[in-house]
Length: 495
Image 1 (cartoon, rainbow, N blue to C red):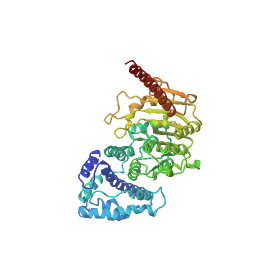
Image 2 (cartoon, one colour):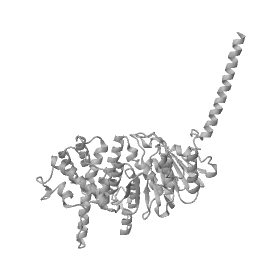
Image 3 (cartoon, one colour):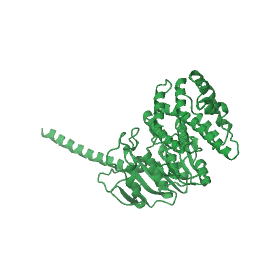
C-alpha cells in the first residue's frame, strides 16, 4: 500500500498543476475520500440487503465512483467508458466538484455525511492539470480496499506520514502536524474514556483527536486490537465524542479527512476561528470532559477579538488558554502545549490569567520539554500544562525532559523520551528530573520550571525585578565612571 501511495506522489510531482508536498497531499486526499465514500456506501447497501431493506445512496448514480472514476466490465477497467484526458478534466472540474460543493447547502444536519461532503469540498478544487495524470491516480487508488479494517488502519498510518511530510515541506508544519510522541503523552495523562466528550480548539490535522480515539478504541494499536464496545458506545464515539475548530481551510479539510480515514465517520469539526467566540455566559452543557491542544502562539489579536475575553490581551496563547479554561466541564481534564513565556511572564494580563488558573483550577503537573521538539519549523521552548476543574491548586509536580542527546530534525522526539515521565507523574515521584512546588512558594504567579536539582537552571525574573537590576547596574556603572573621571581629573592637575 505504501508503495502505491509513493507511486501516486511521484506521478503528481510531474504534473504542471502541482507544486510541493502540501498540494499533492491535498489532491491525494480528495480522491482517497471519494473512494472511501464509495466503499462505505457499498458496505451499507450490503448490510441493508441482509436485513431485507434497501439502502439509499448519498451520491447520484452519475457521480458514484464506479461510474465516473473507474467503471468496470467483467471485473476490469472498462476502457471504452473510463474517461481520460480532457474529457476527465471537463467532468471533474465542471460537474463533479460543483455537485459535491453543493451538498452543504441542501442539508442543515452537521452530523450527516452529506453535510461533511459539502463542508470538505467547499474548500477544495481539482488542481491536477493533466487528465491522463488524473486517470493514472484514479486507477491506483481504485485498488485500495476500504472494506477491510486492517487495510484501512494501515492506510491511516500512511496518511499520517503524508501530513507530516506536507508540513515539513511547506515550512508550516506547526499548522498541520504536532509530533505524535508529544500528543500521545498528553493523551496518556488525560486518559479519555468512552462516553466522554473531547475537544481541541485548534485541531489542525486532528492529531490530538485521533490519538484520543486510538486510546479509547484500541487495546493494542500496533496489533490493531480493538476494545469490545456496545453499539450505543460506538455510535457515541463516532458522532458525539470529538469536537474541534480550525480556521485555515486546508487544515480543516485535512483534519476532517484524517478523522474519517481513521474510522470516525462523523467528527464534529467546524471551519471557524475559535477566538471569535465570546467565552462569557457559557452553560455547563456546552463544556467538555477532555480538552487537549497545541494552539497557535506568538500571534497578535486585534481589539475585536480581545473583547470576547474577560482578561484582554493581544497574545494568542493567553486567549486560547482562557478559552480552554472556560470550556472545561466540572471535573474535566486539560492538557495544553504553551510557550515558555506564559509561565514566567508577570505583566498584568499574564499574571491575571495565571491567578485565575491557579485559584479556579488544579494545575497538578507541568512537563517542561526541550526546544528541539518542534524542529524543523520552530525552536521555541515549550511546556505542557495539565490541569483539571477539581478545586484550586495546592502544589505542582514538575518534570523536566532531558534527552541524552540534542533533538534535531533527523533525531526527533520519540516515545522512549517520555518513559520516565509516564512512570513517575501519577505517584509524583521525586527524581533528578522531577520536583514539587507548593503553591505558597510561588511568587507573582511565576510558575516556570526551575529544576532545583540543577545548578545551571535558568532563573526567570519578573519585569519589575529586571528593571530594578538594570537600575542597580546603571548606578554601579555611574559610580565607576565617576571614579574614572576623578582619576583623570587628578591626573590632569598633577601634570
